[in-house]
Image 1 (cartoon, rainbow, N blue to C red):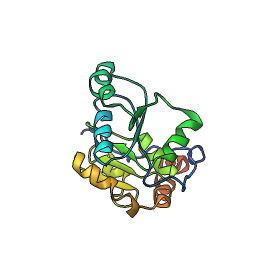
Image 2 (cartoon, rainbow, N blue to C red; image 1 turned 90 degrees about the vertical axis):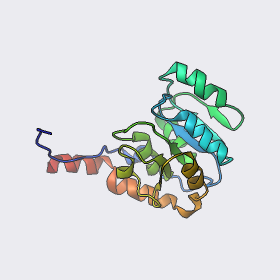
Image 3 (cartoon, rainbow, N blue to C red; image 1 turned 180 degrees about the vertical axis):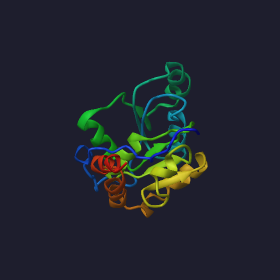
Image 4 (spheres, rainbow, N blue to C red; image 1 turned 120 degrees about the horizontal axis):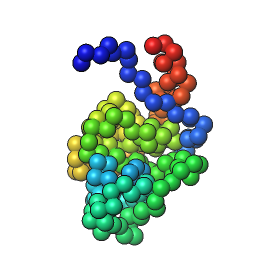
Length: 187
């Protein structure tokens, strides 16, 4: 509290590395993309997708092996696939091909890089209303902010209310690397 506060400057991404994908099937699979750790909610993501009768792909490093073995692995099946870490152009392809990114975090996350990358690809995000998510997601525009599993399931049923192009526009306007650099220069 004694520090002089200058500004909040959100991360910026190279938008060219995350091309807009207008063609993803809105009724297709959903994606969990992040560390496999209780804070990130991989098990919750599977439960949400399954309750909504949607297949889910999970990608990311296993940061908590015990959590993976006790909570995630038992939930895997034909409708829930773990593919491990994904990087480079495969990352953008995976983020852009999903109907939605599920981000059911269990902590006050300071920023969600995969959230912004998904939006850049045109993929809406359904996230628990925690940490920075209300700063990143415009509810009903580029995703939905939800409070728990039931609301997340309901939000998956409303994906047709969102336009993938709107997700890209938000990313371009608010999360480009050029915008970030300009904001730092201004400060």
